[in-house]
Image 1 (tube, rainbow, N blue to C red):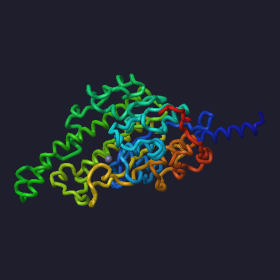
Image 2 (tube, rainbow, N blue to C red):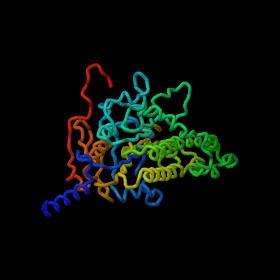
Image 3 (cartoon, rainbow, N blue to C red):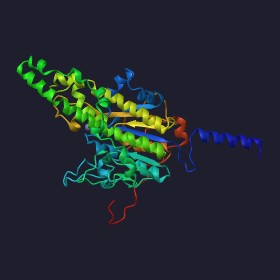
Image 4 (cartoon, protein in one colour):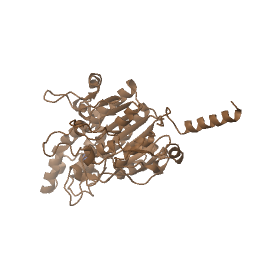
Length: 420
Ligand SMILES: [Zn+2]
């Protein structure tokens, strides 16, 4: 071979390597970690970052891109939004409209879904995947790897179905010892989230006028209930963290997807104590004294979990962090609780090879996540998806090497008489 040609070939190989090309079929070899933090809200995250209290999320933002992530409108419940996140499709196409079917009152389950999840598509292209805790993932579906479904975290009971908790089925025996039950969490592990010693005493309450006294006395009685709920939310995330660590160590895959619910649950319960001036509800003083910092401290805990997942998975990986919606708390003129407390804008952060670094990009939608994941892997977007690739997240040379492509659909052709 003439030296000139050899140099040209070496140069081409260098270009291909720099672009992160995969095994010749146009796909991009990368390891990818998606962390879902339910209900994570920028107006909570940003001040905590300024105070240096979320170092892992801050580092992700510095080395990657971040943006406001618009949730579905009108507001939808979390399973609906997470299914849109995982399919790139609106609820009319994916058929998950709630936790339960509005007419039959039956639990909506993974087999009701009428659109494929991004991890199915990645699996089909040879990438191995791990999926942990994702809403409406029960019963577990076959994947090119392992799945531990959302219902895995609950204590096994005789009146509760225990099949389909994991894929493969027998994985359940391996991971069940990792399930964290709330009664097994020692006080020391959670008491840093609240300040019980600040609680108003009965004596103090009795010095208030009668109306206030009743409000505070009731709040004092409710403290234990709040703490037991906190313990339960904490146990849920602890369970999926333990499973994630275990699977990353024992059954490493190219892709890992971990859903954590605690940020949303803690916000529902403790937002009023964090922002007593802003909410429409009357917040007892004892609640603000004990739980005034609980939600922020849980965000710090979430940041620690994010750091642990990244470290365990490998910090050279591509990492995406997102929430399904933001949070506003009970607002004047609105009913309290459930999706009424949710905010319209969630959190999105992405860092990795081919992704720009240290920039805030334009607002995007929860619908755009699956198309963007496919683009990260050099795979085409389905024309029947409702979202778009977040092009401004990518470095120009990556998009030049891997232009966004479109195929009609990833859905299987309809077979008459067969319901998926
Ligand atoms: Zn919620």
